[in-house]
Image (cartoon, rainbow, N blue to C red):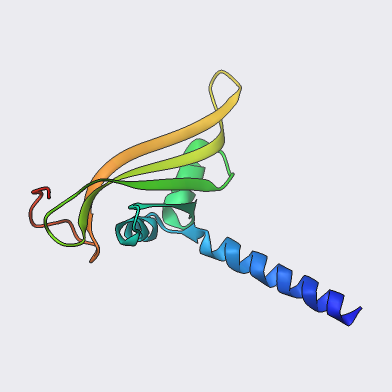
Length: 121
């Protein structure tokens, strides 16, 4: 019985740790993409950005983010990133709910700043 309880407690801690690592700011996800071998990251966005999206859309499901690298610049650690924020179950004026998506691109380096040059490799 004790082993079973210990096993269940460990599973619960692992699930909590996995959920915590899936929650990020948009900037954190962009930096993760810059450091990723495939140039991509995704996760659940928390903080001011998610709060503003919830307030604006009137939907309160978790905001998902997908970040991908469009191109890499000559300046080490700098890329053009595409960011997609998705808010599920957003109400519409017509009545049905839909996914709200916000897409944008920006240039960023691993130090969090924009590159000094946008020459590509």
